Length: 161
Figure 1 (cartoon, rainbow, N blue to C red):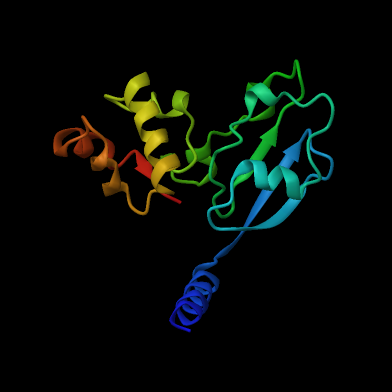
Figure 2 (cartoon, rainbow, N blue to C red):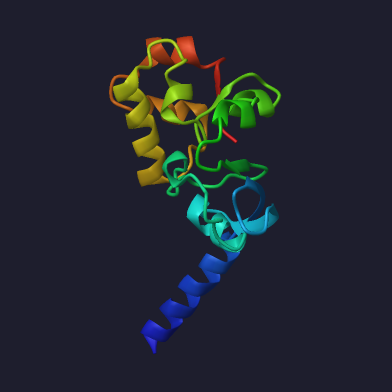
């Protein structure tokens, strides 16, 4: 009886916490468009909602494990396609702030920040993949090697969305 009550409460809490977001997926998917996805959903889930990948999708260019954020746009390139030409706007610029979004930036974009090299960029990505999306920019201080001095240099250049 107690186990049933606890299970029912856990289910109600899970339902209450389920946040629905909207994300846009374009390019080499069967049905490009805007889809609803629950918070915590990943790019692989969004691709599935869009009917899967087309035959010539460049899977090497996709981070399937990346968390999807509300209002995010994902572009799936085709094999041989120039991705730079296909995606002229960086994630931070698309948000209108000119900042790097800690929840969606890839390693190369993170490395454009002062003091962030390949190892720290990978640590930032690993943190969000292990702990979920960054809730505030201050969460960046949880990364080994990013203290108050480094954070002060970065705080106006980063965002979470």
